[in-house]
Length: 316
Length: 168
Ligand SMILES: Cc1cc2nc3c(=O)[nH]c(=O)nc-3n(C[C@H](O)[C@H](O)[C@H](O)COP(=O)(O)OP(=O)(O)OC[C@H]3O[C@@H](n4cnc5c(N)ncnc54)[C@H](O)[C@@H]3O)c2cc1C
Ligand code: SF4
Image: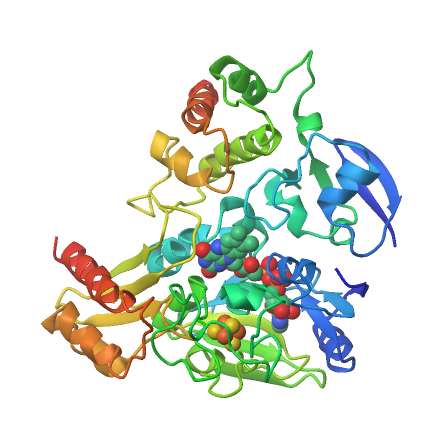
């Protein structure tokens, strides 16, 4: 690990200022992704601003009838919250389908949204990777790409956003709230938070340098039956090959988002409108224009089958 | 940087490089070598300790982030003369072979039963709104962050079931 200095932020604007004013500075929350990457020098911050003491550890009711989740609420606490288990079960389910009990105790709501890709070449500093080192090439294209993206990817980078929780948040139309070094606040719809990076795979999140996430808000509950179907290489403690977050209403309409397939949680509203017609119709539309590799073409039929399984459960 | 950790009930003052993980602080600086280093990337669970009562991977946390925190390691759960019930159950059920992952398994197992009691949900729970129960399936799912190379899993689950039964 490269040397760095460390401070513990006392208030949000001071934290934002400490990062914005200093190239190489980064926030640290749970540390479970950042430290992992610092150990292998994929991330090399020179200064860490620890945000753990900031007052963002609560889940509150909003006047609109939704929930406001503090950026520091741990994945365990979020999945356990009675209101979340009852009204936003897809969110609880997506969280407990990810990582391990130990990691979920540390992982924060903001950090989870900002976790970096799991592309194996991104992790190997000996390999070319445009995301890690812009302009160096992409070893995954033509390499082992079984885990990587099938849609929304580019000629510069075919990686995925690997997280589970964000897929449920996308389904629920969550909003990410931030504050910057000048104290200005902003509300970013989750659909715009993870970006399709095109020729700039190093640009993954719609945040300015030093912009601090303060909370994630959920609109009113959707009702319906909630599912998070995660297909992976082992039954627990593995990233998704494909995941399906869905809320299905009694009349068979609903919402669907896919994980493990693209640079962002993949939700196509025009595709989910076809839910009453079944999984094949939905995925044909959602994955129109997909550009899978030989290694990961299996993800397309897998997505259809995972959704078919959800629809069958909803009928049962 | 100067910092203080409350380790197994004792205040310990340390001055460490910012890069020192909680795991290295415990092992290399406080010489509490019960907590093990496996993968050092949060993938194996050998480094599991309890921080303010919650289990975490001590390898993916900086010591400085825990200034003032209460840390419980395997050495603090029980002693050879006065074993923690989970330690005794691991011995009785042969919940290990080589023993390397065992301190992490035991810390995790203690926390799992506490999490079930507190109503933390899991991936294998059918009804999220019901209180979780300490079934074999639940134990296996909740312990998936602790890898055992020797494959002592079924005996670990038996040990946990015994302790869970006794708590009832
Ligand atoms: C072995 C292993 C398995 C895993 N499996 C899964 C899985 O199956 N599914 C899954 O979804 N995830 C998985 N994860 C990833 C895990 O969910 C993330 O590491 C975790 O959510 C990150 O949260 P954190 O608080 O620790 O973030 P940190 O590591 O502290 O931070 C991550 C990033 O967010 C930034 N940041 C943190 N807080 C803020 C803030 N308030 N505002 C702005 N920026 C901020 C940091 O600067 C950093 O860039 C796994 C991780 C490991 C190590
Ligand atoms: S797919 Fe993206 S992350 Fe992976 S090597 Fe290519 S540029 Fe890097």
